Image (spheres, rainbow, N blue to C red):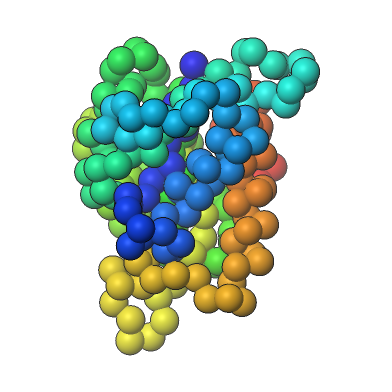
Length: 193
């Protein structure tokens, strides 16, 4: 069993914001690979999935729980810790999907571990799990323009000219997550970074 966590903030107010790209990638994964309807669990919404292509060589061996914490971004670790404990998962069975201000819009970057880099959801997960050693896939949302507060920027919506890059990145990210489940983090860092 793998645990794939998409970070974001719940509620209508935050739909379509830069900070919610983790939710958007997870929704695409659920659409492509989901096996159950969403249900409330672990302070979040969960969908069971098989991340192998239907009829593929790994089909059935790549079971995953897709988790969207509903705790708000800064408390995401509570949800992740509950799911990890319940399924007795190792850190290498966790992948967190989140936004990154330091990457250009639409750029993907896998990492096997490391600091939160200012991402508050990752920061809380690290604090709750007591380790930085878990995989993450960051999707670039671009830097805040001059004069913008970064907190306001991450809660803003993408400009129309940015949407094609984000839509393409989300589709690529969903395929990349499936590759992570089958081939591991090293493969994905070489293939997608």
